[in-house]
Length: 130
Ligand code: THU
Image (cartoon, rainbow, N blue to C red; front, side):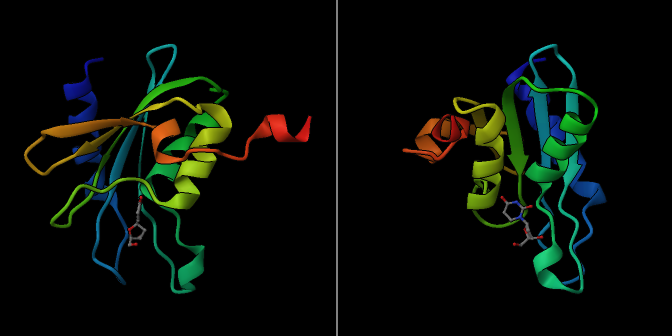
């Protein structure tokens, strides 16, 4: 799975987004260490706070299927700028992959790359509770 392929999967995952309130569609594609990819989209709710982001949709799909190790996530938004993961998604991803590669995908498939430890420095993680 190349970065470009992962980016394309994130773009494709946007099509299932349920966004009647924001109309801001997001797709994510999470690459597991074993090569499996889980995709996700944002799913909004009339009780706005119950909305789940695309990244967390992909993550909980993967975790619930027994995956625990991840190497990269691609995220495609629909605005006029790159869609980097929100704070809640950074925290959730950090639990399992604190140095995860993060690809922010533009509409044309081009992407910028960062890492989760750059996006969430001094993170609170499982080690704090040992
Ligand atoms: N959203 C995501 O899916 N991922 C992010 O990283 C940022 C925000 C969604 C949540 C909501 O459905 C919409 O974008 C507007 O906030």
